[in-house]
Image (cartoon, rainbow, N blue to C red):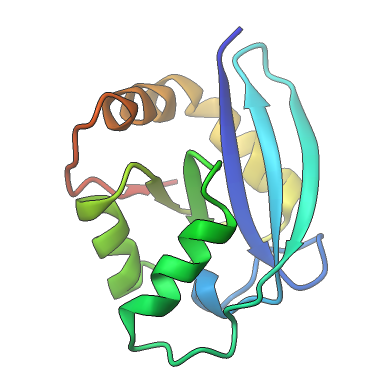
Length: 133
């Protein structure tokens, strides 16, 4: 069964952070499955939160912390999201809804499209696509 690992920045585990993903308190890791199920994996503390936002080292530290995630989810399309799309194997996704439960449902509705992009990245392809859902 196909699975996509998601990273969602949140301070409370209920709603996505309204700020850039790298400025959130924690990362909530979920697995999304092709059969419309999802599973919470774990919460990780963002130890890079207070690093200078303008420095690329912050992005590298965050990627190390959540390196097993296929998809990074945020509410804002930041300059680092553009860099992530262009230079890494991670697929950025910008969402309009706030509740994590609604985010999981919205991403599930786009599972095949997201999985196709993740598959391309897993094979080493990089491109500038940032999904907006």
